[in-house]
Length: 199
Image (cartoon, rainbow, N blue to C red; front, side):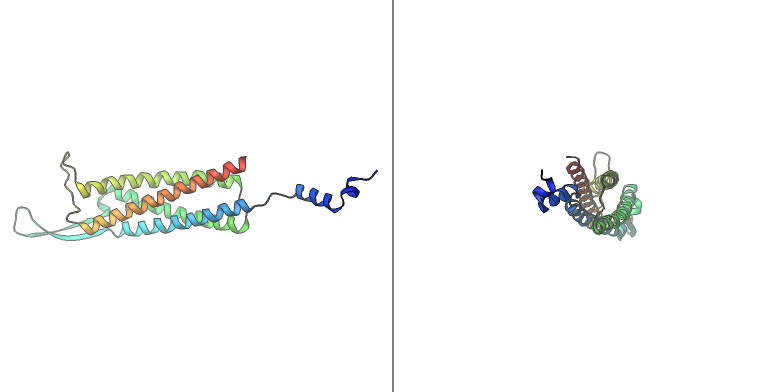
């Protein structure tokens, strides 16, 4: 009686080899291409926001309300704990982005993505997202008070006088929001990749 090898010839060998071969890693490579691009964007955004916030300073001569003389006032981010918090959060995000960008590049070159690595990136991205989002919200609320004031607690607005300073703060907050959205996209990307691997 003919054996399977004799019956099917080379086609049987090919089918057996295909069954024993590991699945292609194209999905992992495609994932880390998107991951690398998002992390590169995150680093660029967070560093830009950090520089804009760190240079937010303005000096101005203002008429004294009671005396006929000019007084020199300055506005800088060091005067607000909320803005200092945002500066620290942006620094952490920038350093984290650089480290994970290098990790993503190495994984992309070697094509060695694992579920453990994806879970690590998912958890760490979510942690940094929480820090950056909370700092952005805190700084945004302070910036809004500076822009509009708050008559209920008798807090006056300052952006009518320190316009350049407020533009810097507004730009830094906006860029931080964009950075937070980038981290949300990275969290979703890792979660989706883990979901596909579990099916």
